[in-house]
Length: 258
Image 1 (tube, one colour):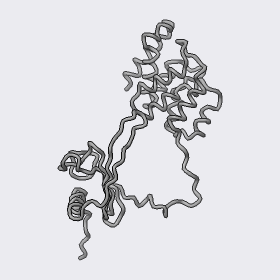
Image 2 (image 1 turned 120 degrees about the vertical axis):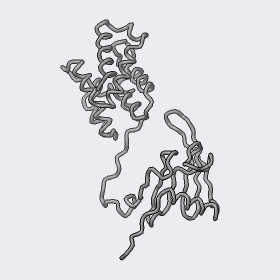
Image 3 (image 1 turned 90 degrees about the vertical axis):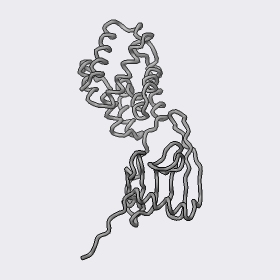
Image 4 (image 1 turned 180 degrees about the horizontal axis):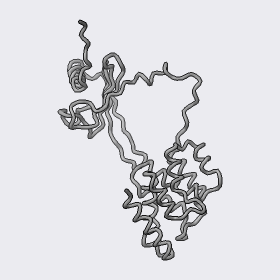
């Protein structure tokens, strides 16, 4: 009877790699710095290379049982004969939380004649589009719509939400064809869906629009930030009582969305 070998546990793979590093030493260390384009925060990362593996050590990140500054939560090696990326996304777990065989990324698997990858719409380009469409328009408080959109974007923490926020008025208040223009710029489907959900269509009752917006989780978060900005004390003084009541009702509905 033939005995089938079982894959080694990933925690065991790490200990083998650690023993190999101790035996032969790390052949090369490459320090690099990653910069968050949104906040400017900088993170020091060390890349360690030996003959059998590449380890990535971001400062402040480690793995269970390793001394401070020594653990490698990202590890690339040949595992069971396959180039594999291991990731330890939970420092309380001994085994790797993710094991990704890289077989599917081989260039030999590229489909011949396939179209070039689409360029994704960047935040910088989204800002340019929003400024072109909105900068000369004013909202109900008499302020530049672009400045309003920028404030809404900055009030959100996550990068994709910020991109949706900066564009949230461009389809509703832009020229015909704006949605197609965003698509041609590389806007992904979920961004287009969120922006459409944030666009109040002609003849649509306002609270029906808010309920439609609420069904899209991304649009719902952006719309809450949008309404909070409209209701800032320095802006609400320029709104009519009916607009204030409408915005407050909409915000209450979205904040208690179930």
